[in-house]
Image 1 (cartoon, protein in one colour):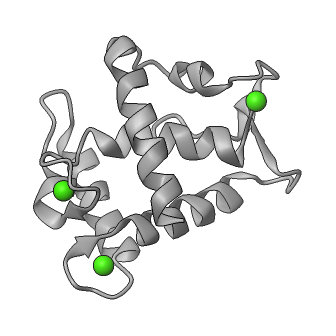
Image 2 (image 1 turned 180 degrees about the vertical axis):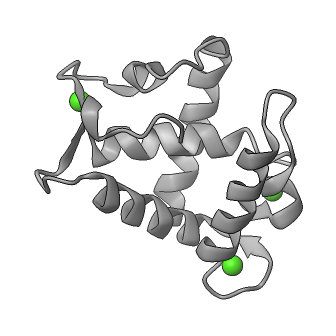
Image 3 (image 1 turned 30 degrees about the vertical axis):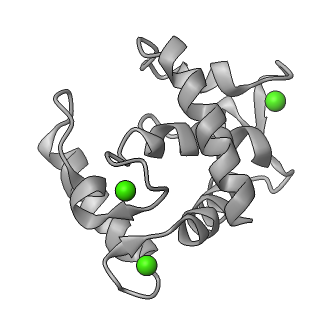
Length: 131
Ligand SMILES: [Ca+2]
Ligand SMILES: [Ca+2]
Ligand SMILES: [Ca+2]
């Protein structure tokens, strides 16, 4: 699992270089690789990893609290608070490091939570306004 997440992270990072301007509510669409207007768990994982790879400043495949909560130039204070809360919730063993294993679990849990109708993929209406 760790290995595949790393692989995805690398792929996601290269994707990101070409998509740095996409940040609207519709930005998830670029991850809808089969264009069925829904995200499968694989597509969703790719999206999340892309978002979180940006935060991994030293690219070591894990996130310290400082990396994770670091405020991006275009981020509101509320968003920073929510990241802090997420980190706390997702750092399962509370060692101050969000590992790729913990990331995989969080993404998986997140997907299940967003998939309100439990059909195994996320439709546009199931997406929150912000991630
Ligand atoms: Ca899809
Ligand atoms: Ca890191
Ligand atoms: Ca941890």
